[in-house]
Amino acid sequence: MLPKPMASDDILDMACRLGTALVLGGVLGLERERKNRPAGFRTMILISLGSAGYMIAAQEIIRMSVPALTPATSAAELSRVLQGLIGGVGFLGAGAVLQSKKTVRGLTTAAAVWVTACVGAAAGFGLYQLAILVSTLTLFTLVVLGWFEDKYFPEPTGDNATKRTNGAAPTSGVEDQE
Image 1 (cartoon, rainbow, N blue to C red):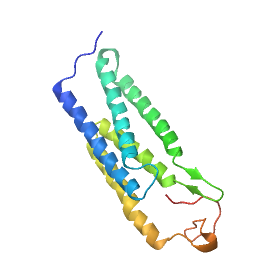
Image 2: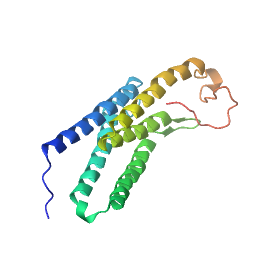
Image 3: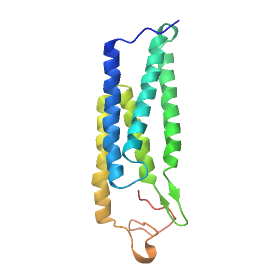
Image 4: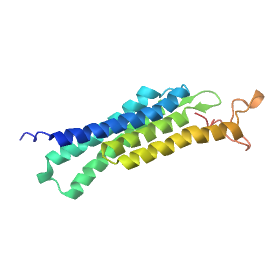
């Protein structure tokens, strides 16, 4: 059985969802690009677009097989797509984390990758307000709180330059920076 062709309203809705994912992922990516981080402008757009695309694809597959699926089954299928996204993007984010002798770098970039996937998934599901809210709060965290952190907890210099302690005694070799 062939799926029903999509209505032009459906295509417009998909375009809006994907456009939202593209714009919001791009805004988050610009912040990372500004700081010259490994996952920048295009990477964040692709993560957000991919997440949105997977959510839309899952919804469309469920829509095409509605007679065979109950609402509970449909929700379970969407939940599986989200679980796959979270795990897959977590693996991608892990690639942004760099470890050297005494430091770990890239944790904030990895977290930004993970959150950008959430933005894309929300946009792909049509949850525009959630996508915008998560993007806004993410930018607040990266920009405003980043400025606050730099101002009030500057990078140590000299012998302690490899460890960030935030005023506490160093207990590990984990550097809590981007």
